[in-house]
Amino acid sequence: MSRYSEGVRVEHLVIDDLRANGYQCIRASSSKGVADVVAVKVGEVVLVNVKRTTMPGPAERLALWRLRWDCVLPVVALKPLRCPIEYRLLTGPGPKEWVPWTPDEALEGAS
View (cartoon, rainbow, N blue to C red):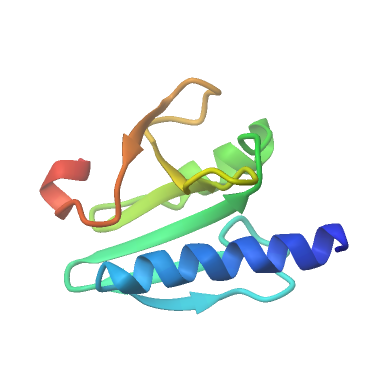
């Protein structure tokens, strides 16, 4: 399986998980931006950068972080082989500026 195919597969796994938690999702196919998936439910928009194993680099984290505002959450989803999806809510642009996040959290719990 090519890296592109594997990336698409992981994006669809993330979309399936978010939909199971009540989100409407849009996949940014061939995304050249920072959000691979946009997930929406009442009062909440989640911009998701999907990676297989490692956090995005500094420029990509900063770009995603700059898109946050009141109801928009900048999230990274990691999906290594044979492991569950791990979501990380960015709390800043630095490599360790994140907290665990789950898609079933209310907006107040993710602030």
